[in-house]
Length: 130
Image (cartoon, rainbow, N blue to C red; front, side, top):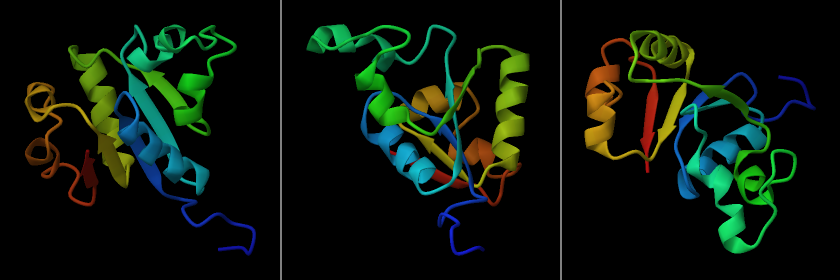
């Protein structure tokens, strides 16, 4: 590791979370050099639309409420209710080091994204559920 390298360079994180706490955890990983991919539904993370409720800008090119939690991340929209969406997510997770989520456990089970579902195919994956 070079002297200029960030401490988490080379770490891959899949961020499958909404609202504040879990997305901020993934943002910290990104800030420290991890490659973070945020997976969201096609409609977008609900926090993309909350700025107006707080009398903040909420435009495609100006959305500080959403941006503060998601700086330095890459974004991918998937429909996890389809085979294709689940296949892409499985591929992402098989190459990831950390999975950050705050979805309810029952929802994760329905999507085959619980720890028990992922452990056989992604044994090195750190499962961070907040």
